[in-house]
Image (cartoon, rainbow, N blue to C red):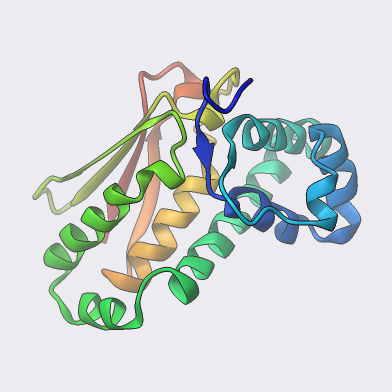
Length: 197
Protein backbone atom coordinates (compact mmCIF):
# COMPACT_ATOMS: atom_id res chain seq x y z
CA UNK A 1 0.00 0.00 0.00
CA UNK A 2 1.64 3.26 -1.06
CA UNK A 3 1.67 6.38 1.09
CA UNK A 4 -0.05 8.31 -1.68
CA UNK A 5 -2.87 5.77 -1.92
CA UNK A 6 -3.39 5.34 1.79
CA UNK A 7 -2.62 8.15 4.17
CA UNK A 8 -0.18 9.00 6.91
CA UNK A 9 -0.43 8.68 10.67
CA UNK A 10 1.75 10.14 13.42
CA UNK A 11 4.61 8.04 14.80
CA UNK A 12 2.96 7.67 18.22
CA UNK A 13 0.76 4.95 16.69
CA UNK A 14 3.92 2.86 16.38
CA UNK A 15 6.24 4.01 19.16
CA UNK A 16 3.62 3.81 21.92
CA UNK A 17 2.62 0.29 20.84
CA UNK A 18 6.27 -0.75 21.23
CA UNK A 19 6.32 0.78 24.72
CA UNK A 20 3.06 -0.92 25.69
CA UNK A 21 4.36 -4.29 24.50
CA UNK A 22 7.71 -3.98 26.27
CA UNK A 23 11.00 -5.25 24.82
CA UNK A 24 10.31 -8.98 25.20
CA UNK A 25 7.01 -9.00 23.30
CA UNK A 26 7.70 -6.20 20.83
CA UNK A 27 10.24 -8.19 18.77
CA UNK A 28 7.92 -10.93 17.51
CA UNK A 29 5.00 -8.57 16.90
CA UNK A 30 7.09 -5.99 15.01
CA UNK A 31 8.79 -8.79 13.03
CA UNK A 32 5.39 -10.15 11.94
CA UNK A 33 4.36 -6.61 10.90
CA UNK A 34 7.63 -6.09 8.96
CA UNK A 35 8.56 -3.17 11.19
CA UNK A 36 11.56 -4.51 13.11
CA UNK A 37 13.70 -1.53 12.06
CA UNK A 38 11.45 0.75 14.13
CA UNK A 39 12.51 -1.02 17.32
CA UNK A 40 16.12 0.12 16.80
CA UNK A 41 15.22 3.50 15.32
CA UNK A 42 11.68 4.65 16.23
CA UNK A 43 9.95 6.79 13.60
CA UNK A 44 10.26 10.53 14.12
CA UNK A 45 7.84 11.63 11.38
CA UNK A 46 4.51 10.61 9.92
CA UNK A 47 4.35 6.99 8.74
CA UNK A 48 2.33 5.26 6.05
CA UNK A 49 -0.95 4.14 7.59
CA UNK A 50 -0.31 0.71 6.06
CA UNK A 51 2.43 0.23 8.64
CA UNK A 52 0.04 1.02 11.49
CA UNK A 53 -2.57 -1.32 10.00
CA UNK A 54 0.08 -4.08 9.75
CA UNK A 55 1.15 -3.51 13.36
CA UNK A 56 -2.38 -3.82 14.72
CA UNK A 57 -2.97 -6.93 12.60
CA UNK A 58 0.24 -8.42 14.02
CA UNK A 59 -0.94 -7.60 17.55
CA UNK A 60 -4.15 -9.56 17.00
CA UNK A 61 -2.36 -12.46 15.28
CA UNK A 62 0.39 -12.82 17.90
CA UNK A 63 -1.47 -11.97 21.10
CA UNK A 64 -5.11 -12.80 20.41
CA UNK A 65 -7.96 -10.32 20.35
CA UNK A 66 -8.29 -9.66 24.09
CA UNK A 67 -4.59 -9.02 24.76
CA UNK A 68 -4.23 -7.03 21.54
CA UNK A 69 -7.03 -4.77 22.75
CA UNK A 70 -5.32 -4.34 26.13
CA UNK A 71 -2.04 -3.38 24.45
CA UNK A 72 -3.82 -0.97 22.08
CA UNK A 73 -5.57 0.62 25.06
CA UNK A 74 -2.26 1.07 26.88
CA UNK A 75 -0.67 2.51 23.73
CA UNK A 76 -3.56 4.97 23.40
CA UNK A 77 -3.12 6.09 27.02
CA UNK A 78 0.61 6.55 26.40
CA UNK A 79 -0.12 8.54 23.23
CA UNK A 80 -2.47 10.89 25.07
CA UNK A 81 0.10 11.34 27.85
CA UNK A 82 2.71 12.21 25.23
CA UNK A 83 0.38 14.74 23.61
CA UNK A 84 -0.32 16.37 26.96
CA UNK A 85 3.39 16.58 27.75
CA UNK A 86 4.67 17.68 24.34
CA UNK A 87 1.96 18.87 21.96
CA UNK A 88 -0.78 20.68 23.87
CA UNK A 89 0.56 23.94 25.32
CA UNK A 90 0.47 24.19 29.12
CA UNK A 91 -1.42 27.52 28.97
CA UNK A 92 -4.13 25.94 26.81
CA UNK A 93 -4.40 23.01 29.23
CA UNK A 94 -4.79 25.35 32.21
CA UNK A 95 -7.55 27.27 30.41
CA UNK A 96 -9.46 24.15 29.39
CA UNK A 97 -9.37 22.82 32.95
CA UNK A 98 -11.11 25.91 34.36
CA UNK A 99 -13.76 26.24 31.66
CA UNK A 100 -17.19 24.62 32.10
CA UNK A 101 -17.09 21.12 30.58
CA UNK A 102 -19.25 22.03 27.58
CA UNK A 103 -17.04 24.96 26.58
CA UNK A 104 -13.85 22.99 27.23
CA UNK A 105 -15.18 20.14 25.08
CA UNK A 106 -15.89 22.50 22.17
CA UNK A 107 -12.40 23.99 22.39
CA UNK A 108 -10.75 20.57 22.62
CA UNK A 109 -12.80 19.30 19.67
CA UNK A 110 -11.60 22.20 17.52
CA UNK A 111 -8.02 21.23 18.34
CA UNK A 112 -8.61 17.52 17.73
CA UNK A 113 -10.42 18.23 14.46
CA UNK A 114 -7.60 20.49 13.32
CA UNK A 115 -5.09 17.70 13.89
CA UNK A 116 -7.22 14.74 12.73
CA UNK A 117 -4.94 14.29 9.73
CA UNK A 118 -2.25 13.11 12.18
CA UNK A 119 -4.25 10.17 13.55
CA UNK A 120 -7.06 9.30 11.11
CA UNK A 121 -4.89 8.78 8.03
CA UNK A 122 -7.17 8.37 5.04
CA UNK A 123 -10.17 8.13 7.38
CA UNK A 124 -12.54 11.01 8.02
CA UNK A 125 -12.93 12.40 11.53
CA UNK A 126 -15.95 14.38 12.69
CA UNK A 127 -17.22 15.51 16.07
CA UNK A 128 -20.48 16.76 17.48
CA UNK A 129 -21.43 18.36 20.78
CA UNK A 130 -24.94 16.93 21.18
CA UNK A 131 -26.33 18.82 24.16
CA UNK A 132 -27.54 15.42 25.42
CA UNK A 133 -26.52 14.97 29.08
CA UNK A 134 -26.15 11.20 28.61
CA UNK A 135 -23.67 11.55 25.75
CA UNK A 136 -22.54 15.15 25.40
CA UNK A 137 -19.94 14.53 22.69
CA UNK A 138 -19.91 12.08 19.78
CA UNK A 139 -16.73 11.44 17.77
CA UNK A 140 -16.77 9.57 14.47
CA UNK A 141 -14.06 8.08 12.28
CA UNK A 142 -15.36 6.94 8.89
CA UNK A 143 -13.16 4.73 6.71
CA UNK A 144 -11.08 4.01 9.81
CA UNK A 145 -7.70 2.60 8.73
CA UNK A 146 -7.42 0.42 11.86
CA UNK A 147 -10.61 -1.41 10.88
CA UNK A 148 -9.60 -2.07 7.30
CA UNK A 149 -9.96 -5.80 6.65
CA UNK A 150 -10.95 -6.53 10.26
CA UNK A 151 -14.07 -8.48 11.24
CA UNK A 152 -15.08 -8.48 14.89
CA UNK A 153 -18.10 -9.28 17.02
CA UNK A 154 -17.41 -6.27 19.24
CA UNK A 155 -15.98 -2.78 18.78
CA UNK A 156 -12.19 -2.86 18.90
CA UNK A 157 -10.78 0.62 18.35
CA UNK A 158 -9.20 0.66 21.78
CA UNK A 159 -6.23 2.77 20.70
CA UNK A 160 -8.43 5.68 19.61
CA UNK A 161 -10.87 5.22 22.50
CA UNK A 162 -8.07 5.44 25.06
CA UNK A 163 -6.50 8.54 23.48
CA UNK A 164 -9.85 10.34 23.50
CA UNK A 165 -10.67 9.26 27.06
CA UNK A 166 -7.40 10.43 28.59
CA UNK A 167 -7.61 13.78 26.79
CA UNK A 168 -11.23 14.41 27.82
CA UNK A 169 -10.68 13.17 31.38
CA UNK A 170 -7.63 15.40 31.80
CA UNK A 171 -8.82 18.53 30.02
CA UNK A 172 -12.63 18.55 30.10
CA UNK A 173 -14.08 16.55 33.00
CA UNK A 174 -12.39 14.26 35.53
CA UNK A 175 -15.22 11.75 35.21
CA UNK A 176 -15.18 11.53 31.41
CA UNK A 177 -15.39 8.09 29.85
CA UNK A 178 -15.39 7.12 26.18
CA UNK A 179 -17.42 4.20 24.87
CA UNK A 180 -17.18 2.94 21.30
CA UNK A 181 -20.80 2.35 20.34
CA UNK A 182 -20.32 1.43 16.67
CA UNK A 183 -17.36 0.01 14.78
CA UNK A 184 -16.64 -0.63 11.12
CA UNK A 185 -15.04 -3.96 12.10
CA UNK A 186 -18.52 -5.02 13.28
CA UNK A 187 -20.10 -3.96 10.00
CA UNK A 188 -21.21 -0.50 11.09
CA UNK A 189 -20.83 2.39 8.60
CA UNK A 190 -18.36 4.22 10.87
CA UNK A 191 -16.60 3.97 14.22
CA UNK A 192 -18.49 6.05 16.76
CA UNK A 193 -17.19 7.08 20.18
CA UNK A 194 -19.50 8.60 22.80
CA UNK A 195 -17.81 10.81 25.39
CA UNK A 196 -19.79 10.79 28.63
CA UNK A 197 -19.39 12.55 31.98
